[in-house]
Image (cartoon, rainbow, N blue to C red):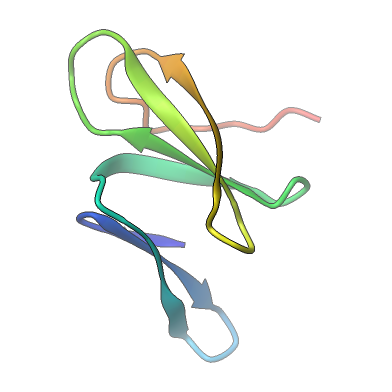
Length: 80
């Protein structure tokens, strides 16, 4: 996945092309992808307290849920 301003596109690594944009309208600071659950985690831009992370389905791009995070959430680790 690649973020570009207010959009996110999935990347086909075999062909090195994007598979289309599925999230538009919000600028995200950075993100991470959970391969096991097929979920894309994106941290909303901003430097004030109470930043948020939006979680999207990796296949459909549908927003699944959100949670409150710290300042400018940008790094994600998935513990198994």
